[in-house]
Length: 516
Image (cartoon, rainbow, N blue to C red; front, side, top):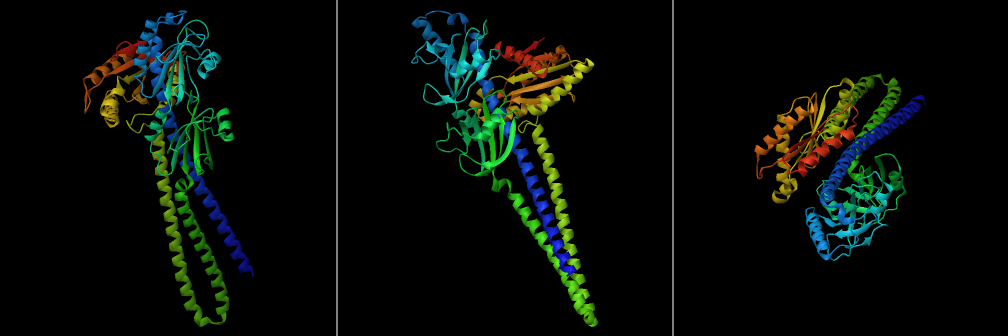
């Protein structure tokens, strides 16, 4: 009876250990998939931010070149209207998927638009962009959730103030972006089998989705979970749930796009991310079964020994058989242990690869924006503590969109890779090069004054202008230089470098500009 109780206790212990190992293996699969999905969602959010940076460049150009006095006129002539309609339409056509481009006075009255068929003096006081500009007097630019445009298509609107006195300045410029461009952006991302990427605005409206589903664009999800995430303070949230769009069980990540009323959701079907766990469950189950079989064999051995106590002649043969079984079982256990150690080494290798993917740009091999921001914060603290000079160099390939449009994105990617190698070859070991977004790069230069940084920028500009790229020929870049000040924050320092870059591009490109 005691041996039977011991066997039952051992089986319970094996089952508990198997359950614990299954939970640990499940948690590992959950953690690995969560990290991968969070990294992918961060990349998508950076791409989405890049879209609005591009449209904001167009709005900056419009605001910088439109005379505010034109918005103060009580009435304008037909000739003036035609002139600014043509001007705005020409600007709009430089940005694909731009639905509309308009100018409003401080009272939110539309004065000029790119389409001559649209009547001027439209009152937009109740529109989201006007309301947001009134509610955020310190904001230079705002982006609204998705809405139906005057042209009957879904669009996201971006507005930028024209500098001037008062909370509404001298008025503002507004551009509407067709949401189909976000669908095109998501189509370029490899989600793997049964992977899902969805772009949602703060009203829980579906802006874009991959894979596409008929009738989901513009659909409101009305999810308490998503609303709680929007209202909360966290930037990313991982959860398992059933999709509201296709009813599939998924592990997914919700991530806010910094500074924009948009959320990126990336999910993966349970049968995909749990595939390895299912295989591991079979292995653990078989191992537990083998252990219980071994225990059963040991129990049987005990009973056999008791039964054979009166049969000494058969005892030797029986013991030899049991010894052979024990050796086979030990071999099986060693093989299982070796397999577990191999799996652990493979997991460590995967973790190292994930760490590399989280800090480097997959195309160019340069540091990514997230890693650069961490390094920038650290170097800024060191510089301000010890009084060492520290400079920032921000540059952007001129007319890079034309390269992609004329030669295709693979050629454009090759230009980005070649440019990265050329720049890295001419930097010091202490310098940090990162891809900031799209065709824009940043370089942090420790122990380097503004003049030295400007000299390096001029050197890089000249080298780039002389370099011939396969299929494209020569390209140029514009550079902005800013030295860190004792009272600088990362944001103020980056903003001054961005301003210098904007000046270089506004003054003809292929130039270096330094902001004190």
